Length: 398
Image (cartoon, rainbow, N blue to C red):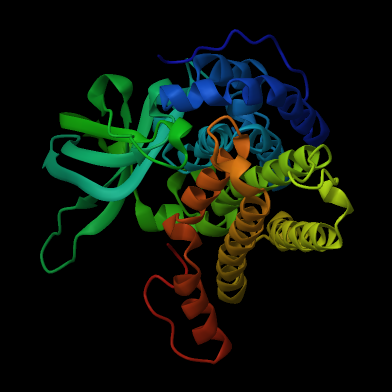
């Protein structure tokens, strides 16, 4: 089902208002978390509530009725949603963040999407799985793409493909945009983690894509898409990886904070089975809590350092990009480490399906496995830079 807005005007959206609205949605999202897992997608009520709150327009250019806010509002509102349900936070981050991607497309493509529906929801799948055949005015495209989170609620989808080479040139990766009428959803999402993200496959069969709905992937990655000529918001024109990956991390960090708060609340009431002593009176528990909370704070400080850089940057150097990539991957490690300790310290009760800690544990591991958060790849690129060695292709990207 494609969500349509029934929202009344939200007035001027600010950082404080965005975070407050997201926080207000969190209790109902948490109550629906088990239902969302059973459906293997977000309930329509959750997506509709995000649209009605005006949050889906957080990064949309003002010329299309959006709020064009910056990184902090995006990240901190995502954290509030992900604390309640990691899958909801993951979908929220992508549904909001895709406005940045569309803002890089030609103005005609933006008009196709936003002119009639400023709340239009977009999904994506980046792997170049599509086959493009040149035709008059554009391309015919076919393919089967995995991992399109939130696709059930969307009216458009960004998909990756390789542009056929001309002459001796190598095939070039591109992103193109197709409406819901041009694709089918293939339900392949039977997974352990992020089960409620509905990250299903998208199938396209001989659909026509006009030229204005396709952009070179390198232009997107560098923040130099044609749309940046008219869209000059805080994040428009910045390289894709530093500006967009904080959304993944906000979901990851939010889920970790949610696990920590759930664990602390449960432990305040927990007694040992044999002696009936309160668990929180043990020094080893207090020390473990201090260590876990320090890891979460370290992750938050790393992320805020990156956001401060993005908020003040007109351009981002190679060193800043490689440092961002290393830091992003390390944040994922910190979140996994903290969640792992929470789960192990909780004892056997955390393994029950009725205990939300097992869901946080699964979801955090699933998010941390994202290719953009691979520490070995990020560390290799950073290490080459730090040692003055030549860069390799892909050092700055996934």
